[in-house]
Length: 208
Image (cartoon, rainbow, N blue to C red; front, side, top):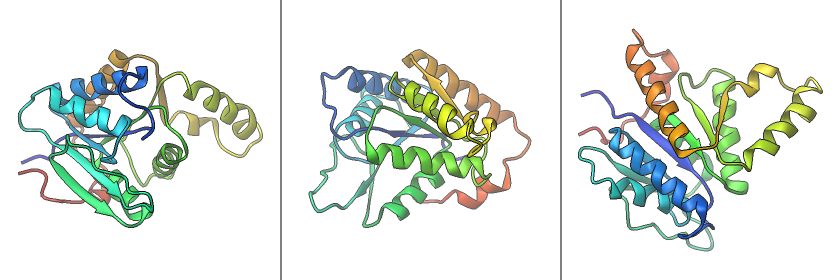
């Protein structure tokens, strides 16, 4: 059986139900479930919970709501919308599992942890350790960051203009879903998946 197309959703643990970003992430994940995709999050509260809850709300069959939790001094409790759970002691191992499981990434509003996840994934795409992996920045907060990178990093010669082309900045739920559906169709049309796809993918028994 071919692996499910899996989308990692990164975002803040601090934004709660009632916040516009929570609602949007919920709707993105519900749409992903209806497309037949799995959703992978950090398994905790906030926008992670929004993604897992949205996935379950779709009542789609055959997909997985996956949570990759991190053990912290202040306990991060798992949200109740997970089919599959895994816990990690180190961020590095958790990050590698995120990228090995995921075919695409959606980055919702978030803080330091979300930025870590974004830049780690972006770096792997930049150097070719991941390929055919869209990185989608969702929401208005990412516009100023991209402008800063363009003005202070790219224009200073510290990165190439092409590096900014590895990410997509999308402002609507519908835009995110359309982009990922197109990426999935493009992936299916490939005659072969690049070697890095096989090298970095791990099997946690999620395809049964």
